[in-house]
Image (cartoon, rainbow, N blue to C red):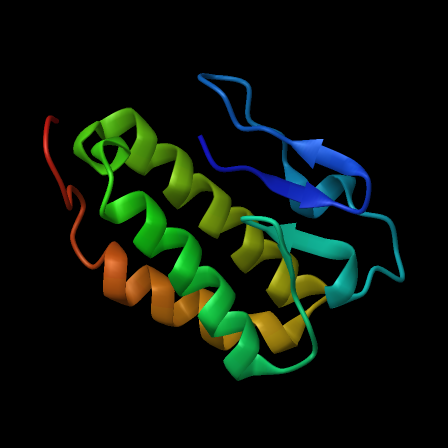
Length: 113
C-alpha cells in the first residue's frame, strides 16, 4: 500500500492506524521534506500535481483501487495533504484539489463498497 512520508519518518496508513499528519509536522517544513510515492514535492504547483496524479494513477490502475478500504486510505492521505497545504504548504493546494476532484468526485469511485 502506498505511503506518505515526511523526511525520514514514513507514515504508513494501515487499517485504522491513521496519523494526523498536519498536526505532527514541525514548523518550518518545506515541500522538499514531504514525499509521496517515493517522490519529493517542490514549490512548483505543476510538479506537485504530477506527483499526486502519478501516485493515484498507480493505485487506480491496480487491484488496490477495487477495495473500498484502499480507496479510503488514499482519500485519507489526500485529506492530510489538504490540511498541510492549507496550513503550511500552499504550493500543494492546487494539486490536492485537482486530485480530489478528479479521483474522488463522488463518494464511492470504485469496486466493492
